[in-house]
Image (cartoon, rainbow, N blue to C red):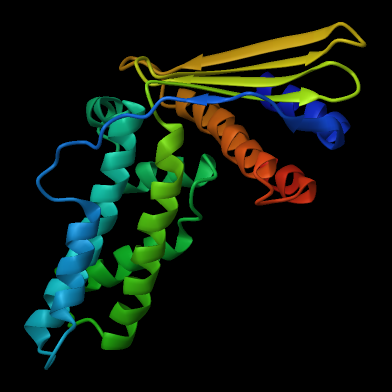
Length: 241
């Protein structure tokens, strides 16, 4: 992707000059679902209280998987990507792939939860309590991490960092109606300007998600960098995924 090459080159050269600028986030109200990801997490926790039975272990495992599915679908709905996934008939592996490529969550551990669930549903094995306790903590962390990203996914977001010495900087805009994400790179001292925009429609090729998820990864990394959550080395290391 040309945008990937240009953005990585720009940040490698100028990240030490970047300082936070004015940004704007517009927030959506909570999606009005009767059951939320945290409800499923609570259901799983209640199954693990008191005297444990095989039925409780099975129910806890199922509810942990539902919590993950619900949180992923919640995020995709906020992006307005849920219909794209339905039209393309893309399942959980593709959804997890998006989260990983967008820098939201490293999904290898979540995939392992699917293995436990598959052993239950296809081989009829009772889950081990140790596995369930580990995955309960994992799913709880997963839900919290995705919740941290949700404020970025409103109807319209503008994020900017400016070059303190050269003038210009990097500007990112995210709109969920299409959805679309655009990035502008500018160095006023060299008259360098590059603009990239990616829109995802129902009839877009599946590969379009790769570009969209990369641009969102840039947003997540730079937002954390501007807040002092991570350093420049982390940003540059994880830009290439």
